[in-house]
Length: 155
Image (cartoon, rainbow, N blue to C red; front, side, top):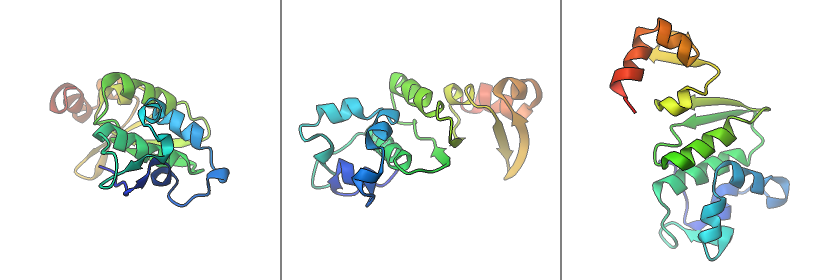
């Protein structure tokens, strides 16, 4: 689970970046945080953490996602960022994130909904690349991918 600080929601996302130099509203929209912020009386100025509002696991994951998106990175690394999200929010999140044309997304996930949308999947086994391709290609050619897809993580 990502680490958040006892500070405002905005400061947890910006982490020292000047607000005038970032696309905060776009990051919030991509991370599907707008509905949550609308429910907080103080909005982005809501204190979170031990001295404030306790966020759900999904809210923490999406806050960390917004923190990453607010930076002008060409490579985005997502390590199972939707594990604590409900199905509907997860679907909206991935739909928005995977539409990022100027960025490369490295996604670490075992969720079928995410893997089905990937341009290229790398299957690792014992620290080595076992196979590469789309979900359909790997289902036709990789025993390890089939095991993961149909057995080990049947979700």
